[in-house]
Length: 245
Image (cartoon, rainbow, N blue to C red; front, side, top):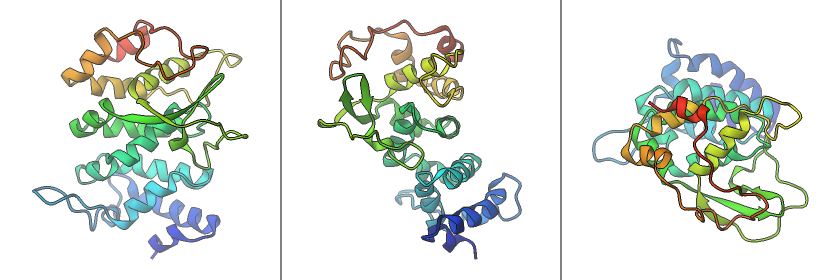
């Protein structure tokens, strides 16, 4: 009976409905099946997602209290093999990865936790390894339009220029290194992104992932970015190396 209220126009109603549904996303919750019913996967048929999972994915873009519980719900549910395909579809991963990379994202740590769980799947790993995301280059950095939501608002004024598609993984590594900054004065990000360590460990389970982290990278791979922002390629940090198997 609560599920239809996830789409209510009133954010307080959405929050109340989601806060009551959230406990049922736990692994041993008695009514967890309400999130799994209607999900079809396996065989030759294209996987189908239920309305409630589609709603939760959309609510990750909602205001803070709602998106926080939506992310938590998906983190809890992402251990289900029945939902991996739906949660790993490219459009949603583009949002999740762009959101994590955006330094202004308030819930980047929860998004990193979700990505960590999803990349336990080889299919999700393959998608992330080849994923491109859009950026708009600015004088002092870049903006990620696909991360735009209530908890990662767009800059004002909105950046001029056209969006360019760039490989996402190197930006994830750079975000991870920035998230490890201990000094609050130098911190550029709202999240610490610790769970990206397990994302990188999951990615290195494939030859392509190991090649990315351990192989040589071309010096001009990010030529679309402003030289004042992008530094010369660095060696893999000690923190990242500890994440590698």
